[in-house]
Length: 323
Image 1 (cartoon, one colour):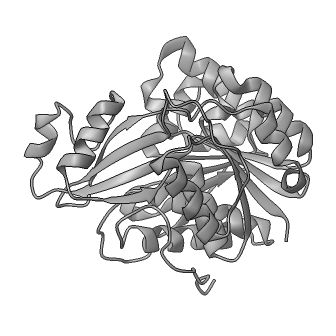
Image 2: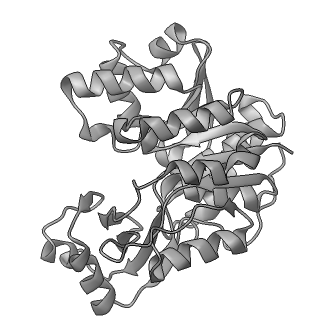
């Protein structure tokens, strides 16, 4: 089986269930938002609140899902030689995801860290610091050469639209020239005007498969001059657009047609990583020869398993649902 390789920011999460959203007001943040803060703020949260370390990062979470389904998954990213970085590496080792990038050894910057407050209704609010996540080097790509050459799909997160790592992205593409590129619209709602338009054009030019939620796709289509997902799909008929719609499931648009897949019923505990799990399941399905409808069902099933637990990665192996 060919590899699916992820290329993105490597975060270690610290999950904190809270009894009241008053905690969020202490930090001056709104529920269901994501805010960059000083690393000392995150360290203070870890010291103050009882929680659990969980390896995270959106694309990294998807790679863990792919491996839990029995697929071949690998990852390119950067961690530091610290507690959070070692936790991240150990989690991938246990999940059988290939991760060969060498740790960043300078002691002045730590691994990417994200504190996630889980509200009583399962909503998540994030405080994060990137640390060394963007310090991906050419040597990290060389370490990945063997599995890149055997990759059918390259799932690139923020690096697909971040000019600061364009050189690394291009080196990865050169080693996997036949791989389809998938990407995510995560945080696209933070962009506006010409930046949103240029970013959208870059993504739709690079990627064959795009994941995002309803609002992200509304903004994405608008930035490209289209009214909605269907109109966008007609113009980019060769692309696959996966629009997650929360508890309703997902709309997959291809060649102007919309395919709707319902979500699987589950007891929602923590919505962290639902979209990542869908992406992992969907890409796994495509990689093993499933059609769009079948791949969507696998993705929806994986998402249902993740939101029924704390943390964004599977705690056990996953079995494909009946299709």
